[in-house]
Image (cartoon, rainbow, N blue to C red; front, side, top):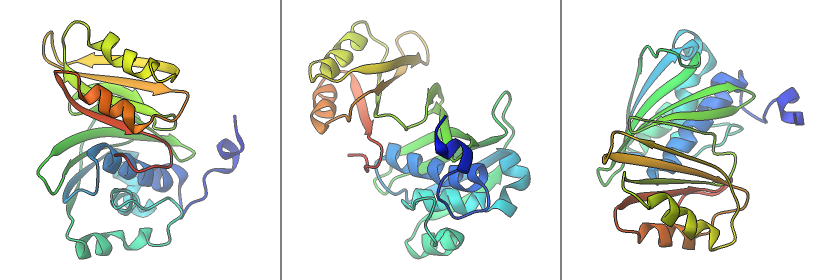
Amino acid sequence: MNIFDILGPVMVGPSSSHTAGAVRIGQITRRLLGGEPSRARILLAGSFASTGEGHGTPRAIVAGLMGMDPDDSRIPYSFELARERGMEFEIGETVLRDAHPNSAIITVASPEGERMELGACSPGGGRIRVFELDGLSVSFSGEAPTLIVRCGDQPGYVSRVTGCVAARGINMSKLRVEREERGGRAIMVIECDQRIPYSVKVAITAIEGVHKVTRLNPGEESK
């Protein structure tokens, strides 16, 4: 346990889970998309849906989509700022079975037309967990350097991808692979002990059959 488990994050209140965590859900959605979305559909579930309005959860998620941090004083005005920047967004509710009460499903589109869907929850203390990405089950927080590799389900991909990481002296702490069906879409999530350099992304992207590589280094915008 660290001090932030006791005191909570530095943030614009009122809630570490419903506000600070919601900002971080928006932030990680932005980073996984690769930039600020032009459109967003935010569906709140459980406690996010029932009490989120009073805690500013919708505004917090939109603020995160624009790259704001949990302590940004502009969070209460995020709707207005998003409209000024041309971001279209809608807020709604959904029901999720067996999900954490503080959960959201966010569908975003980039200005270039790329679409992505993410499911994430905020268990408390400003922390988050992504549990779904483009319809596939995942589990990561973004607190550790993380690689997300979208590819086809083909023999040898795991060893080739992890080989690119190991070749640069990076230690992998967790590896999870999920697939849609045999031979279908797959997502590989690799959490690491060290910062992931851009050269790793370039090497993995060059593997035939890899569709997209995203690297999440804490404190950095994805590229």
